[in-house]
Amino acid sequence: MKRTLKRIGQILLSILITLILIMAGFVIYLTAAEFKPEPVETLEIGGQAQKTLQAGDSLSVLSYNIGYGSLDKTQDFFMDGGENVRPDSDENVRNNIAGIGKIMKEANCDVQFLQEVDKSSKRSYFVDQTASLSNLIGGTSAFAVNYSCPYVPFPLPTIGKVQSGLLTLNSFGAENAQRIALTGTYTWPMRVAQLKRCLLVERVPLEGSDKELVLVNLHLEAYDDGDAKQVQTEELLKLLTEEYEKGNYCIAGGDFNQTFSEIDASKYPLVDPAYWKAGTLSSNILPDGWRFAVDDSAPTCRLLNQPYSGDREKTQFYVIDGFIVSPNVEVKNVSVIETDFQYTDHNPVKLEAVLKK
Image 1 (cartoon, helix red, strand yellow):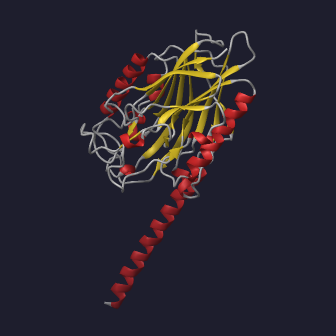
Image 2 (image 1 turned 180 degrees about the vertical axis):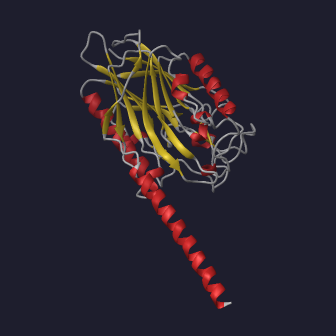
C-alpha cells in the first residue's frame, strides 16, 4: 500500500513538474515573440489620393471605433462584465464590417480615423478588415499596429492570436505616416499579451505653403487605473503643441477612453456603481485657443456587460470619442452619428472644420 501511494505521489509530482515546465516554456516563447515597436516607426502608405488641401479649405473627419467587427448589438465582452470573447461565426464579422463600411460611405468624410481594426486575429475569424475598408473613400490608407501577440492565453476560451491597430483613410495626399509609441504601464509578464498603445500620425502638405495638416488617430488606454491615460494624454498634447508651434494645423481624434468636461454628464449617468467609470478630460489641460470638439447629443459608446436590447435606461452609455483641434482650425460642426450600436459598441463622430487662413 505504501509503495502504491509513493508511486502515485511520484506520478503526480512528475505531472506537476511537466505542467510547470510547459507553462514556463510558453511564457518564454511569448516573451521572445513580444511585440516591441520602436518609439517612432515609418508606416507604409497605400493607395493614391486625388484631393489637395490649402489654407482656407474645409474638410470633414470621421472617428469610428469599429470594435474589430465583432462587438455588434448582440454581443457582450468579458472585460466589461460579460462572457463572450468573439461572435458565433465569421459571418457576424463580415456582416458587421459591411454595415460599418456603409455608415462610413454615408458619412462621406475626407479623412477617417478608425480604431480596433483587426488584420489577422482569431477573435474576428481572421477577417482582414484593413483590406475590406481601405478602398472605401478612394484615397490613401495607413495602418499602425497597437496589438500584436501570437497567442493571448486568456480568458477561456482564449483570445488566441491578435494583430490589430489603427487605420487612417485619407482622401488627401499624405506625404508621411508614422507610428508614435505611447507609454504603457503593464509590466512583465502581463505586458507580453497586452496592447502597445500608439498614435498614427499623418502629414498632409498644404498647397502654396510650407505648412502641413497634422492628423493624429488615437486610442488611449482602457482598463488601467487612470495613470496611463493621463501620461498618454500628456504625450499627445506635447506632440500637438510642438506641431502647432511650427505653424502646422492639427486635428487629433479617436477613442480617448475618457469623457470631456464640455459635455453634460447628467445625460449619461452611471447606471450601477460597479460599472466602469470614465475619467474626465478637463479643457483646462489645453493650451489657449485649443479645444475639444465633442458632441453629447447621443452617446458614443456603450458598456459591453450585456447585449444591447435598446433599453436605454438599463444600458450604460459614455461619451468618450471626439477630437482635439488647434487654434488655427475652425470647428463648423461636430456630431455623433446615431447607429444604435448595430454593428459595433461605438457610434462614429463627424467633425466639419475649416483651416483658417
